[in-house]
Image (cartoon, rainbow, N blue to C red; front, side, top):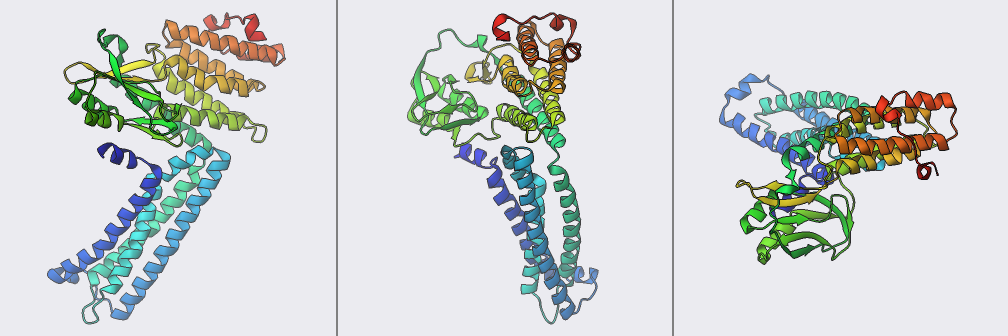
Length: 426
């Protein structure tokens, strides 16, 4: 149950429904609280000017109507942003826009202002209007106007491709840094560990978020080691093995462990590293398509990917890493994209998609040079392979020799000496 709630509270649609509703209901209930305090402590009434009943009713009516109008405008602009984002940037960004806290708070404030005014009108006393509460509704209306101005400014920049690429790059870098700081090398696994129990997927779908802290706790309680065989974002069928467990734990322990790995009907942002890379590659390929023809957006994507992946270029080139419990014992082994896989997933599609663009090839050469400077020996060999493929694409594209030289000059001296093989040229 705890694992289910943790996932649900990270779902964009769930947040879009619950966060504004929670804010709106809280502001609406505030009206009842203020009127109760005002009647309990008359000094509050003295802080506000006397407001005739007719003026109070008119004010609250206008505020309620204006709040609902602003709320309708908010959702109209949000849908417009969704449409523009889906067509200009990529449809998979819609999930991120629905989880935008500014959108949620704005809808909640507008809805709350409407409920506050409505609740106050329902409690109006003809003989003694709640002046302080009415004044608060006016202040809340001013807050609504300021929030509307801020919201319009926010959505105006929400469809900026460069800003989106930068924000995705930050999330990718943070996710890689978080993964790097918490996982340990596979060499620490006991040699006598025997995985005797399999956990299978109940439904077909994509492997989603692994609640590693929860599975670490469950594995520690059951005194077992859990090995996650399916990597994040991988598609599995019902019955496929997704986890192996040492020993033969009881059904409750297996259920607790299994609940920590979700199988989702579609790829989601819960797989932060994989999802961020796929988003950036999608934006880059869309920009390189003939219908868009925006190479500078693709260049921004290449720069963002190289900046994020460069932080992992000195990692051990192994896809199996784990977590230890408080006693220092390995309890969780989880697959992750190795640095070689990261570079391959990021740059193979962009290199092939931009084979005709000298601007993109120059950007790739700069990216390879940046990553090569901080990479270990294994990753340098991987980057040399990518440079060989880049040169093969240049040869296959029948570019002018001056254009080819303009790409190669961005490579460091060691990479400039890499030659293509016959297979790569073919």
